[in-house]
Length: 425
Image: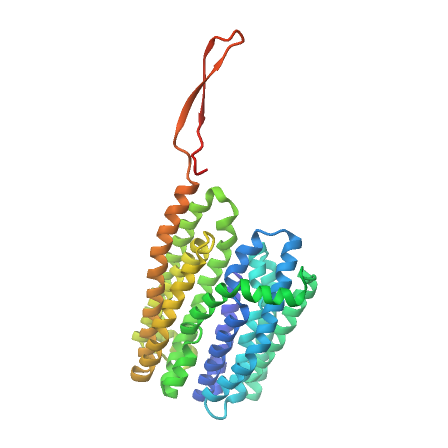
C-alpha cells in the first residue's frame, strides 16, 4: 500500500504545479521528469529488474557486498550521464523554463540510485516507507505552502532532490553499511559494468519508449499538444503505481517456495491482468474528467487519448508480470531484453511520427501499439518457458514395485511401492 500514499501526494502537488507553472512550465516539468526518468533507468543499470530476485537468494554478507557493488556501478554511471542530461534538457525545454526543467530532471534521475529493489528483495516494506516514501512526502508537504506563497514551482523539484539524496545516503550508511568488494573497487566496477550489461540494456530500451515519451513529444509536437499529452501521461503514471505496488509485492512471494512457484506465477499474472482491466476502464471512462479536474480545462486530455493510454496500461500490467514473475525467475532475461528492444524499435519512431503529425493522439497511438507488441512477444515466450519449467519440476508419474527377501533367503510377499526418479532428475 505504500506506493498509493506516494500517489496521493502526487495528486495533491500536481494541480498546484499545473496552475502555477502555466503551459510552458507544465511542459518543462514533463520534459524534465521524462528525461530524468530515462536517465534514472540508465543509472539503475538493471538492478531494479534483476536486483530483487538476486538479493532474495543471498546471505546477509553477500547482500552487503552485492549492494556495495551496485552502488559503485550506479554512482559511476550517474556521474557519467549527468552532462548529457543537462545538455538534452536545456535544448528541448521551452524558453525561460530551463531551470525548472533541470531541477525536475535531477530529482527524477536520482531515482536510479534508489535502494527500493534491495528492500523488495529482502521483503522489508519498512525500508521503502522510511527511506523513500517519507522523504518524498516531507518534500511535498514543505513545498506545497512555499509554492502557494511564492508562485514559483521550482521549489518542488529542488526540495525533492535534496530529500531523496539525503535519504539514500542515510540508507546506505545505516541499513546496509557497504563493505569492501572482493577483488577491489576498480575490478568490482569493471565486473559490475560487464555482468549487468544485459539487464541494463533491457531497462533502457524499455524506457526509451515509455519513460522517455514526453521528451519525444516535447521535441516533436507543439507546446499545446505537449501539454495535453502531459496531463494524460501524469494520470497514467499515477495509475501505474498500482502495477508497481502489486509487482513488487509479489516478486519475492513467487520465487520463495519452489514447490508452489508454478501456481504462484499463474496467480500473479491473473492479478496483474485484473488490475490492467480496471485501469483501462478507469482511464477510458473517467480520464478526461480527471485531467480537467486536476489540471484545468486548458491542460485537459481528450477521451481518445486517455483510452489509448488505458490500452497501454493494460499491456504494461500484463507484461510486468510476464517479465518479473515468469521470464526473469526462470532465467529468460534475454527474452525480456528482446521484447523491450522490439518495443523501442517500434515505439520511438511511431511516437515521434504520431506526435509530429497528430499531436497528443498520435503519440498515444505509438505508446499503446508498442506496449501491446511487447506484451505479445513476452506472452509467447512465457508460455513456452513456463511449459518447460513445469515439466522439469513436475511430479514424477512412474511408480514401480519392489520386493524384499526374508531372513531365510526366500522371497517375501511384502511389497514396498516407491517412485522411480526420471533420468532427467
